[in-house]
Length: 140
Image 1 (cartoon, rainbow, N blue to C red):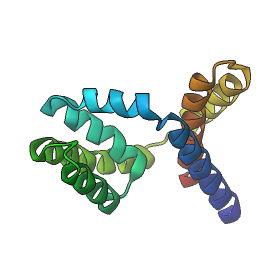
Image 2 (image 1 turned 180 degrees about the vertical axis):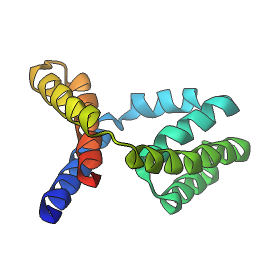
Image 3 (image 1 turned 90 degrees about the vertical axis):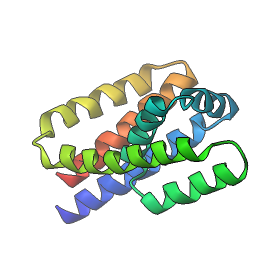
Image 4 (image 1 turned 30 degrees about the horizontal axis):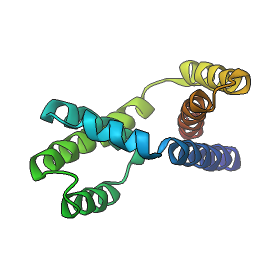
């Protein structure tokens, strides 16, 4: 069971990082820059990225580089970091729930949708969903 959990976790991490790299293109960065225009949106952005990244030190490095490059202001970075910290806690709370059935449903749905999707953009989003579902499955 331990090897199965580790295998699912590493496969999920690989699929998640591969999908995120694919959508990390210039249009996505421009969308993210527009999305963090207000503090509320910045907190929501930090919440989502905190659930995905799960590394506060990585978030600090990314935010510091964005601030030094002038792409992000300090108030926005503080809002993103606050949301990021909450996102870390939300993911741990979700894992503590009994989510075996919804995770199996998500694995099946994302796997089938990824197979049937002709659009590469949608396929990347389904790959991210499948990666997250496999990570959740590994923790159970």
